[in-house]
Length: 381
Image (cartoon, rainbow, N blue to C red):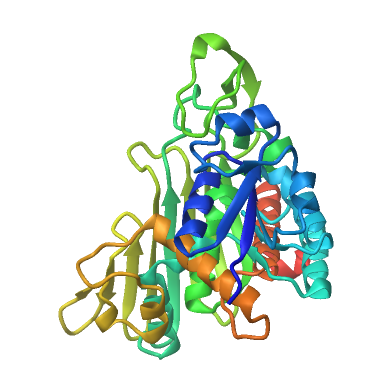
């Protein structure tokens, strides 16, 4: 089996997470690129060393690179993914795959044409108990699915002095809470349940119409100095709630907010069936709640000896040894690596088609929020 050689474009918050996970599975991370070589050099320790490429184009020109991880700001994802595929590189792109469905549809078509691995970093799928929930639903244990509800809550943009490039539409896109964190929830529950979304009804709220933008660069999650900032108008949502109608009749609702004091990074869901229910919370990722009507409820602790085969395959440690956020990246990248080694195999990594689907859902949600009505997905398609 050949060793995959990878390079990463983007060395911000999530770039080092990609690098660490790739190295854990034996992928050789040759190097990385940033918007400038000086910025890249300043991030070299965080990225674990490696070659500093002078540009993204220099990565594509390196014939020894098999795989490109794109962790740059959102507005660059389409052009960089397209260029990488055209250069014959396999691609793993952070979400969102593109800024709109026109771009993402082009990437889906290009990925099919090239036959290269083209994956989206929906890593939350790769918690072992997410796979376990999926297996239990597929086996019929829950019965008919009735309702899916939950949230993705953070507090890192609670104050008007909090800042990130994600607040600027030209870099992030026309939505924020839904696109940034809500997309993870939507991908996760559609992966687990197998349900497709028929229509949505959305409500958005922007708490801070004006924020303090730092006059100098600032890292994600870093505190800014309000005395070295200028007023900046905000027109993306801090908060969103979305009612969902699934194909087949099930109903759902999700709240995505970056204004919830004390919620650092909490994704939660409950899936209610006609026989049983399941609930999970990312802050206690090694516990799956199983709800019953006529007998005591259960808490399933992550233990490979108790899990379904699919969940066991993405479990690294025995029962009592917790797994978390960083491990999800590792297991996703193992699937990508396996697909590169055996392109004709039955692989389960999130594809560009999955990324395109989430953008379809997102555009329907945006249209609903801006027109104050139910929107069917086929209106977008």
